[in-house]
Image 1 (tube, rainbow, N blue to C red):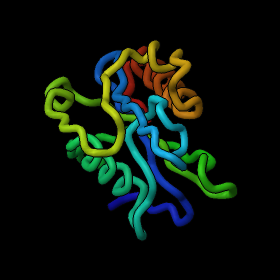
Image 2: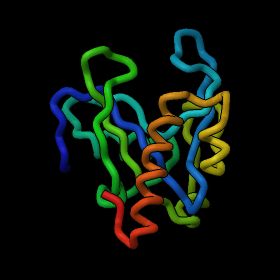
Image 3: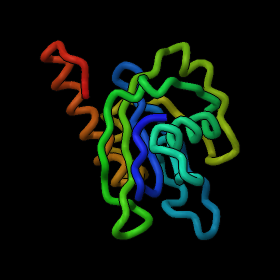
Image 4: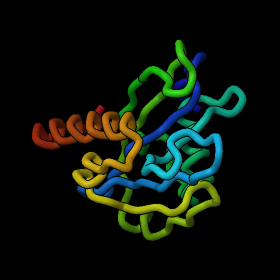
Length: 152
């Protein structure tokens, strides 16, 4: 697929349905980063997969959702949260109500919610960096929507 990034550790995404965002509650297992906090879909890279492949595989494993790569309409490189000196890729995209209704939650995490963007961004029990990144995407989407343009 498109968009190989030679030194990225993983990919995450802010996926919106209207003014709501897809989130999940992380497990509370020993050694797990950010235990018991609300997080966004995505995870670590496997093998030589590209960023889109990584995110779309994780979305399938975690939520049973299959999206086409062109549904990821926003992309930015950020510093990795898990490995200093490396990068991670963050995406933004939209989900339909039918896609949300078709979610089949996997075995990672305690549960999932489609929650309002404002609630996620203000939740004291969410992964702070995911809130920051989701806020950036949401602001960019809003700016483009007001200008009548597709987000990049």
